[in-house]
Image 1: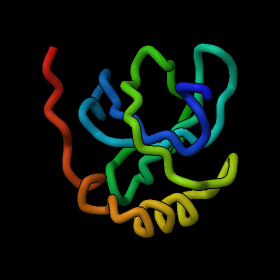
Image 2: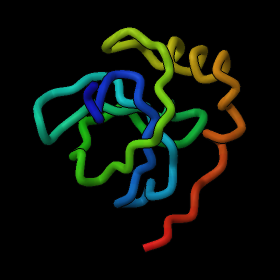
Image 3: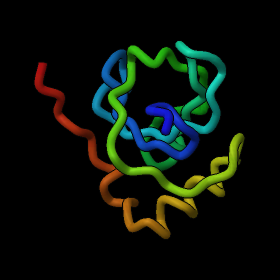
Image 4: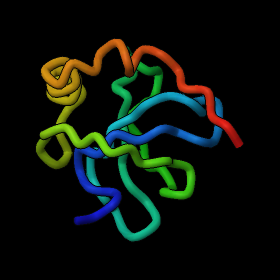
Length: 93
């Protein structure tokens, strides 16, 4: 089991999107993954992200690798996580 696998829900810990939930779409290498919010739910755009800027959660949603934002949004809705994605998480550091 990989900590940064496709479909893993994470919290952004750095940058202007800190506290927002996102989903891993693909793994590039050991340090980088491709994430999405999707943008209309969490304001997190689809982009490459350093794994040091993510806090993985236990939740994994079933999506295909490189899924488009509509498929990710549908999987989030089916998992009942839509409202959770719309709210920001306060990070304790």
